[in-house]
Image (cartoon, rainbow, N blue to C red):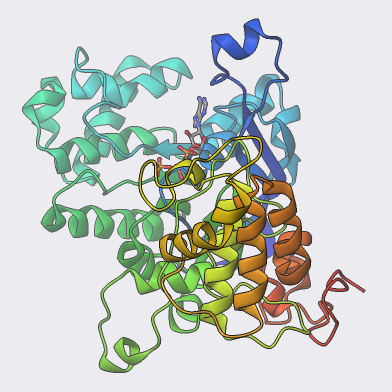
Length: 445
Ligand SMILES: Nc1ncnc2c1ncn2[C@@H]1O[C@H](COP(=O)(O)OP(=O)(O)OP(=O)(O)O)[C@@H](O)[C@H]1O
């Protein structure tokens, strides 16, 4: 697994892939502006010859779309991918043909990615047939050799996928990906559909094949233990963006991005030392890729979201107040049921009667806050709740923003500005974000 650092084999620059397909018919009838799913939103990374780069992140963060778009199985919305120095999206004719041979994919699910009506021999031979490689005999010889190389028997050529176990089917998928003698293989969750005992065998096979054929891998996985053992470097994705890229050992021993830290914290610890480390638990749901948060996309869940510099506040309290703000901004509080159904007569336009305001604020405080707030936050929040009692969401939102707005929501962190030795898209690792500034002057100087 020694990578040639002189020139990347694959260079991904600002890759974007948006989907518009999920717009509802109603939206279209009403002529509403289509809102795309920003599955991949400005992703950049290099893959060096001979290395395995891991691409990790929670389900739906855009890993598979990145893999498929860079292989040109999907057309990008924007950005550029270079393969061996050439723009993949400009390739035509023979050059495109060569790229299609050189860059292959192994999909996650060996049950659905193999045509059940074709024999295993036919499946592995198909790419050779499509590209018209050699005579029929040459092709059959190659298929027999490939099946043997991936640990199957050449006698199994005439069998159908359903006659094989999950691990064997994945070996067939690997043999097919190798048929055209590729240089680069995207492995999209290659072992996640397999039993744990079979996973290791398939990973070992992939490692052996990499050495034997000099392959370069992009390994897409949500399984951090797999990535840790197999990858030279790891890129961490969150909501369509890459938040950190680092050598595997560095990333697992000393992750810098709060999202990477939280992801790693979700994996059982091997050593006692590691177990002792403070746990950064992830709170809240992943926001929609149709409407990602402003600034840093992770800030709505980040346990280390940065308070304004002139605000002396404990991190946990700031996180809670930020979550409260987010709920108010999303109008995600049922004001009509405060204090229990029917306790207050709440009018959507005017709120509650003046004499009910103190009791309403107390009931809302009970419902939304798990702790007593220290001064001055108790008064600030009570004033905002008073505005909610008058059904004035905007005033409450504005008040809380004026007091608590974070740099994380105002400025998009750039991984290239990272002050550590690898790209980290987080304001905590950006010297240019002035931590001594007063609230309101957090933006890059
Ligand atoms: N063809 C499509 N049309 C509309 N939205 C899509 C399409 N394909 C993917 N998406 C959306 O794009 C986002 C990224 O999906 P993608 O499959 O790339 O994520 P992933 O990280 O690979 O997730 P998983 O591990 O679950 O496969 C998701 O919100 C998904 O719903």
